[in-house]
Length: 442
Image 1 (cartoon, helix red, strand yellow):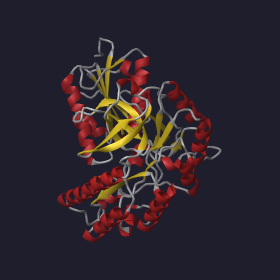
Image 2 (cartoon, helix red, strand yellow):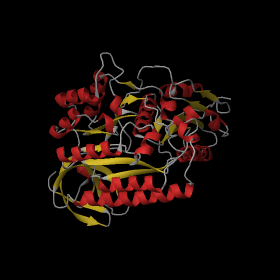
Image 3 (cartoon, one colour):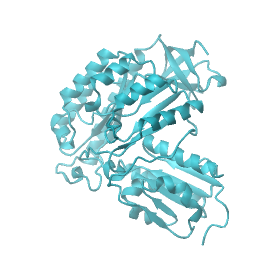
């Protein structure tokens, strides 16, 4: 039978990437416009929406955990599951008693309209084929709960088909928001009071290749630079083969685009890179980062790396570790290899045992911690522009902010009135691994 009370309270949980965060914000904003009250996921709600991730087996597990938590919180609530896990494995989710709607990516933007017709004791699965060419779609967003920085999805899908990655199956082919659409959304965010926006996508460097006339990420950035809809712009992950001389030159000259790039490496061994289907060598990657460091000395470079890909023996892992040791990087995101159903890598021989994958991942995480500290200490005594965030660090009791080059600074003398302000801060020292900064100007 249908729920007899209006869906006045809705809670949304989001797993995974910044694209998911943007899409959840769009769903939430549409629901708020319809009169629903958005409440924290920890509270009792009439409807719980779980926006899932499937990049690893662990994120599938975490998604199922959160679904069950929502059902326990309120067995009478409508439970809506969407996102990449919902798109790729709806039958697994359907086995969980209490799920009301499983919505694939083709239906995600319609969730606000579908809620009114859902039956509590029924179940709908709305998951279609995501592979055909389709237009870019996204709900507009002007507000992000608990975020001082805004996100803007400008691209979706991926045509690369790396051999370990399930995301092209989950997201479909690459498609882009028009330049006019990007500027319209950035102006909306600027008018809403945001100082910084992060341009994000599943394959950001492919932006514009599907549009007519064809354009590029660099062309878009040049237009944003001219029109300046807000004060600070940040790029999310971009492939090493898509960092052109034009992009490096633009970053070097820009006072708008943050000196921060996240450039996936995945492995530092050429044989493993080839097995992954990556289109570059370790030497190419190293030369790129050396060029970037020379052109933009304060640039923060983050990297992704996978530990324990099939066929990675001790020598090839050591090649990866040694390469990262030699690179000018600010931080690492480390992932133990996780076989994804239907990907070529899942059926490759020479799978690395789980304990060994875990051991190698820990070695790389320790290396990442050292790289992070080394990069941060370069800026001790210097002044940086920091965007002040609302949240207070639970351990230090200090308000935090991020510099343009992505240093998380704990502010010794900040005021609540400085939240969402770009302020001048001098980095004064360290308390353990925390960077301490003193506010010099409002």
